[in-house]
Structure formats: structure tokens, C-alpha cells
Image (tube, rainbow, N blue to C red; front, side, top):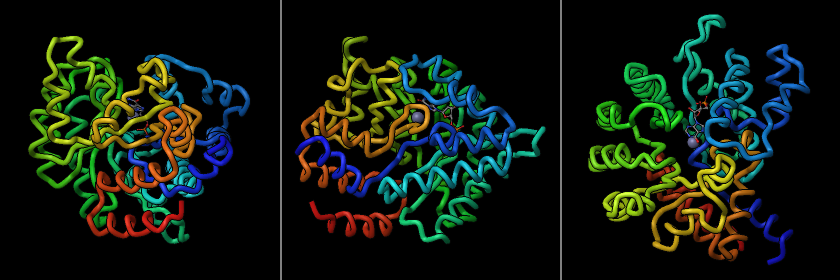
Length: 349
Ligand code: IMP
Ligand code: ZN
């Protein structure tokens, strides 16, 4: 397949996005609109916020904070959510789980609940409009904000899950992996699982071996868990001389959300060839291509598929089978999965 044919094919392929953060998923157009809403000037903010060069993980986190300053009002949350959904739909993503940290911003009258309700309103409006994409929401817990805020996030997620009949369906655990200890949140994760919320947990993004081991061992037998990044899961043995975590993940087939461009840009993976996507794929372990933040990393899900196909020599047929297999790991109901599977199977290679 030549380059152009591959690009067209990956765009046309129906896809599933399971790991994307609202505030890092803007497009140049939605960023321009957010800047205009904030009253800032376009040029300097655009230059600062739209990345095309690599930054290490600390620099990336500074950037996320700047973007979040543009998304503090109901109008901005609505605008961004709606734009992100439309852009994914245009990229032929048929199912997406979008995650975001609900914010409490007294100056604008924003509360955590209003933030999430605004996202829900945007999703509902896209449904009404007939966009060909199913969208579900995950409520993010930012590890920098501590356990008390995490507990509030779980309460809100449960309440909204019940009210929306499963449009909200889980929690995300994210934030700077250099801050705090994920193991301190184990009771929060278990509580969320007991309430029927699914868990998308950023783990082993850096060599945080001990917290990764403790969280997975405590939660995986009681909750539905997917791992965000998991970059260091298979490097555990090099650091400690044994492969306990990798074996645990492999045995239970815990799905891994793999974000190629994001990991390259934040320099947690050296090059595409060495990306752990291939390592796990070769083991027939569930590993799902995701974007993480198509705005900050200047990518799209189509682009991630193109990169994976080029680097790992995936054929059209392999890509079709792969994308059908990603449906096994969505957090939505079996019924939704079956509807999507039937559609994906009809896709003409
Ligand atoms: P928001 O939750 O919609 O505001 O999206 C931005 C937030 O997502 C950041 O403040 C982080 O907490 C989280 N985030 C985005 N990318 C990453 C990542 O690569 N690792 C951990 N957390 C991340
Ligand atoms: Zn992420």
C-alpha cells in the first residue's frame, strides 16, 4: 500500500478512541475560538499553545495548565466539548470515551457539577444533531488534587452515571505522575468500582513501579480496569530483577491504552520502533491506539493508525481485524459493543 492509499484507508477505517483528555484535544480552530472567548490575543497564545515540537513531561504539564485557563466558563466547556466530538466524528471515530477533570472556579461561577453537566449537554446536542459517533464520558481525578477531591469526583460520577443512564460510565486517574502516590487512591478506586464505575488509570507512564504494582494488585480483581500508557510495565524487570507486574497484567489481559505520538513528544518513549504498542501486540495482549491529546500533540486518531501501520507493517486486513478487537475493551454495554461490531465487520477493505 503506498503512502497516500494508507492515509485514505486509515481515515476511512471506523475507529474507537478510548483515551483523550478534553483540554488537550482542541484543534487550531477551537483554540482560536477559545482564545477569542477569553479576550486574549490570537497570535501569541496560539504560538504558545499549539505544539509541534517535543517537550518533556514537565513542560507538557505547564502547557496543560495554560490551556485550562482558557476553559473556565460554561460557554468554553461547551464549545470545546462540541468541537472535539465533531472533529472525532469527522475522523471516522464511531465510539469515543472523552475524559476531563471537573473544575471548581469561583470567579466564573463554575462548579465541578456544572462543568460535567455542560459536557453532558454538549454530548446530547451532538446526538440530537445526528452525528455518527457514540460518546461516553469519564470523570478525571487529578492526582495532584488529593484524595478528598477524588472522593468528590467519584460521588459526582456515580450520580451522573445514574442520571444519564450510563453516558457517564467511569473515572480516569491522571495528572502529573511525578506528584504523589497512586497507591493512596486505592480505596477511592475500589469504591468507584463497587458503585459500578469503570476505571481508566494512568499507570507506569514513568518508572513508578511500586505504586503500579500496588494499585493493580489491589484493584484488578474487583474493578474493570484499563491502563493508560503503561509505558514501563514491561520494563519493570530491568529495574528490579523480576517481572511480577508484567506477568500480572499479561495473565489478566488488562487492556493498555497506547498513545504513540504523545509518548514520543513527552519523551517517555525514544522512537516509534521501540514503542510498547508492538511489544504487547506481539503477545496478543489488548492494546488500543489512542491520541491522548490531539491538540497538544498535533495528531489525530487516523494519524496514530498511519504511524502504527507504517512502523509495524500492518496490512489493511490486519487493521480491520485490529479495530474490531478494540471494541472488546470499551466501557459501554455489551449491546453497544454488538451494534458497533456488526458495523465494523461490514467495513469493506
Ligand atoms: P482536562 O482534564 O480536560 O483538564 O485535561 C488536562 C488534564 O489531563 C491535565 O491537567 C492532566 O491532569 C491530564 N493529562 C493529560 N495528559 C496527561 C498525561 O499524559 N499523563 C497524565 N495526565 C495527563
Ligand atoms: Zn492521558
